[in-house]
Length: 224
Image 1 (cartoon, one colour):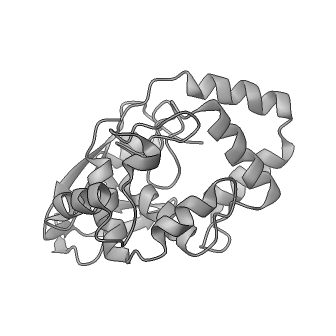
Image 2 (spheres, rainbow, N blue to C red; image 1 turned 135 degrees about the vertical axis):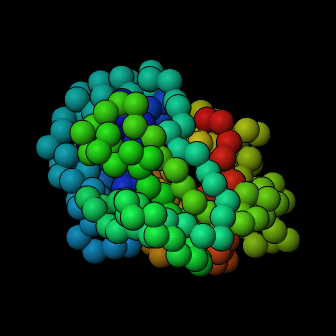
């Protein structure tokens, strides 16, 4: 289950405040197999697919209405840096080592709980910090607002002027940058092929991993 009163974490999604129609469609896509992960046998994705298979239409509609009514909040702060804490994989997300050791960030986003024990205990106050390469936010803003001379399209054309969503189109501001990169990658590689995916597929087909990182850092830095 997503954590932080449905605020999500880097291994899953923030579903609070998403449009009702969008939630319903995503569960339909999970159920049909149109929405998958580019990573084979990825646990959180398979869990959502199994959940969708066993939920009735009435249950899905009720759940969508409930989650859509919860105010959206951001649970992650973005830090630009060249050096990051060493990290390890635990439970489909990263955690920082407690020794204080650091290493170059490289071509990565390192998103970790600020307090691992608090997050593991599902404390609703737990928060994350996402380390991104220096300059990512400004470069991502340039790409998101101009399209990068044809590399992509302006994010606001679909997601609204503040990237908070329009109608059935979800907001992307303030979301986990790790999650955002994963979705961009899945769209580019055809793992997300559900409703309206064609628009996103065209938007990401020319993006590099570095582009995805900068876009994710920028939109995560915004207020949802």
